[in-house]
Image (cartoon, rainbow, N blue to C red):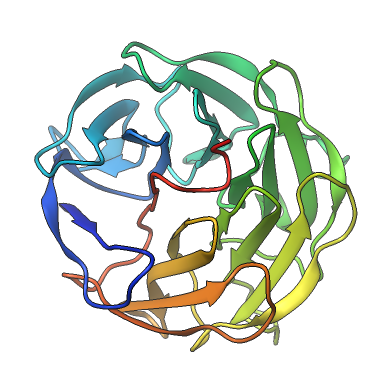
Length: 290
């Protein structure tokens, strides 16, 4: 677990640079952002003991420096997923052994304070106790949760919410394979899920996409550079970027990218400052910004 915050300029290629530090050393958290502020939430921490945390930190993306305290989630958990509009961030699902949660929280990004209840993720008849580690992405109006793990197996469910309202998710469609531990990112039109974990012989370098304003099943986009899971992701309106991953039991520092409105395989971008996985990415130019 690291407390490292790194940054890249998405429009270029090159290695990540140091931004500052989170308050705690964590992994398996998530992140959301507006055009001015990024927020990390939840995860598995090391202080004062190894356990799930409800902590939220924030940074001002235009500057560099250490994170500050934002408030607390409604429930301490890890392996949750986030998405955001310009004004609101939503955190969904999660895990706290042996519990899997369908809870969704939300915050107003420009303020500080504790998260509030938003609603529940879909119970598809097989995952009534919730799920964790889907991919998350958003347009300015919709947030989408793509895949995930819900007892007793991996899920191909895709569901969505209207970010400005509160309520339970609605069915969007299905992923082509049941998987979890993906990275999700988007521009205002298209959402992308990259990487996967599934022990069966599946395309774990799979990149899929959806058109966020519609509903329907995910479609094939291309391949990541290598088979990988537990990758972070972020995006501009042009590019989606995948950051670090677990590859064959080893944490990699590789960064790769795609052009969101085309289809094709990912290309090399550069390297993170450290090899890591179960990380989180956010940007000040992603799909949830109008």
